[in-house]
Image (cartoon, rainbow, N blue to C red; front, side, top):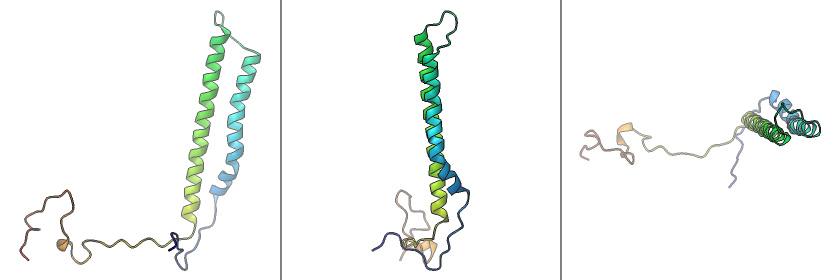
Length: 127
């Protein structure tokens, strides 16, 4: 039994902006990682501290800001990647869904009460 069976005569939608964005994401991820790292390296080589501020305190602030920038950028890139993958999957061919038999397929009143619901007076009719 195949998990994914394509629907006959299903058409794929033409690809669009999602592939353009997906192809740019690796370079974006690299840039979003290298820029804060270079900023940190430059700040460690040429620290610009305020009067009365220690270099250690300055470098702690720079490292926190650089790490926060990298984490935020990676989160944004991966979020956009997930969105692009979803769009690619949705534009692909249609697949056959599993059959789901309805309990109340014949008439709404013939269905047994759902779990967790009390039977109303209409549901207690004699058979």
